[in-house]
Length: 64
Image (cartoon, rainbow, N blue to C red; front, side):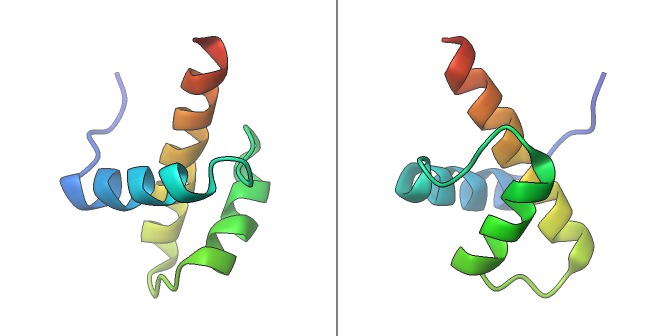
């Protein structure tokens, strides 16, 4: 079982993913760099969690 994401993380991730889904990939490191272009997140941990959730969303989108 994985960690439970807060509603803030999910809302921000879904919003960014809907606007820029073509820019994100299934690679966490690339998503982390792309995320810094579109959003200013002060916390490194929060940035990593959001990038990871976007990676998860992209993988789910590919499998459907």
